[in-house]
Length: 257
Ligand code: PXP
Figure (cartoon, helix red, strand yellow):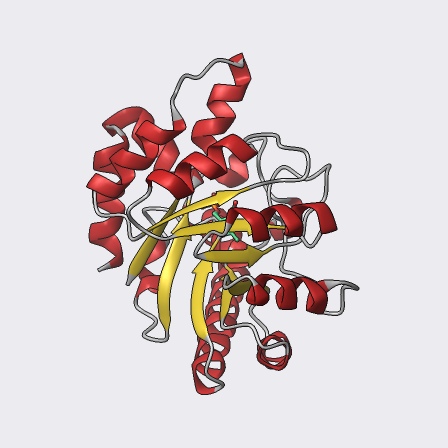
């Protein structure tokens, strides 16, 4: 199982002070030396963390593939084509959201054009989608080579079932359910991920997964044979506060084996 380490949150901390500390390139080297298989970053339209200079430097200095997440905004796609990461993962983007909250709408105007432009520039294209058979079929029809399954619903259900989240201000109202209901829902979400991964591979897609994965919930996803790569950010960067980035990546790498 390959591990893509998303280092956006290092830039989030940097931007809190608008100084070059922590340095994103040092973070990249730490992740690589701990065995990361890929560096993942998101160039958001509002540039709230990663900026063009970061992307250029990371692509220049990284010995491992760079997976650049982006929206289908025309200016962004032009930039991505010029920057030439190994892979572009197309994600939905809303200005007001804290993070990427759901999978892509595959009927979005401009999606097919964006995929074609990226392909023309020799960039592999992945689509960040909800785990649904319909979206897998449509992704294959759109000629993406990769899909990344959004594991957010699985991760949220896992947290409400197995942590004290319910008793904090971050409790998820829509998941305020009994333990039995949460267990059923967790199985349902996991089954959706498994069946989507299986169909994806059958249709010739490479299947990745990510969002909300952490040291507790990653095992079930890492054991799905059809998934070849996980992209993980928040939990690794959060753990690095206590054990350092290198150890945080090493520990996650161990869990995904
Ligand atoms: N994959 C994609 C496509 C994402 O947009 C994100 C969030 O930026 C991640 C993976 C990583 O999610 P998390 O930070 O919750 O691990």
